[in-house]
Length: 393
Image (cartoon, rainbow, N blue to C red; front, side, top):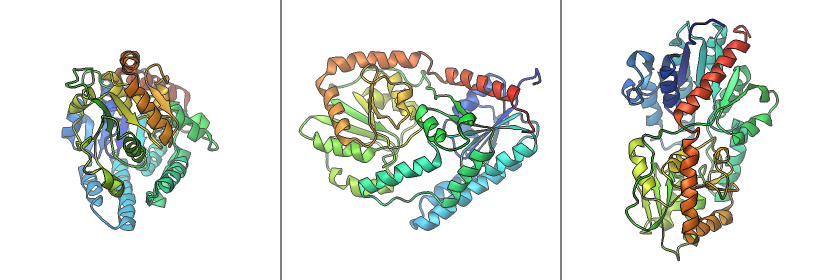
């Protein structure tokens, strides 16, 4: 391997945690280019220099427009073509002197293929479990909730599987994701485990303005995040003065489920909020609840804990990477409504214990869970890849 710094290019059909990674790589002097569907102005908010950003913003406009199409079959087909469009466009903007390409799954096949022909090392970022495991879990969860499941187009599944086969490494955030890949032949040796981080400047404890016991749920309100289970638990605990705040978008699939709760004054929907405002909503909350059915490592867990808010999360949320149940938060089985209800009730009844868990949660985050820590671990992985893998492999 050369003594000169690595040149690392990121391609991402959206944002995800790619901008946090890009900011870390830039600080280490190894970010070559960030190719994204987001505009340069958004990347600037992460401090990423304009000359490091290639924006394919038309693909993002197209992606968002697709969401307004009511015909599911057409919507899925157009989503597949949006993924292909971004991927092919990104592959043509790939700098030829790149050493390592880091690409986000399902929009990276052409990019990875071009990178391989040009002798570059390749990494696929996977924020969720193996696509086949993901579909299995979601099929069952939607059936249990009696909600129609509209999976992504089969061709997107095939893109994922092809990307898994040809890439050098697969970056994953949790053991939950790792286990889903290990179940598949030939995947174990490709895995690169690196849990995410959190911005401690944006997320830190502040004063709660009242004494209301309040649950917060951040992110999409959807079956995948177990939102229906949280609503059911709230209904079962309606005799208690417990509030629920949801911050984020509401998926259309949830509208029939939400009907009985529309006039409930103890449930408030705040809509999507900027990252910098989330700390306020965490501060007004007693616990975070995230009973996810399938998720790699939800960053809202880290955000809430950094704000001193204990979390009740499922074992499928990625939270097992950071939470020791009963010490700095709580882990429950995925899909377990009774366990969720009992854990909320425990937190409601034992406020003093919850206070000590809040202190432990914040202390946990301060010890190795910053984005800077994530960046340092990532750089070590990339250096190891560059030194041990031949470019012509």
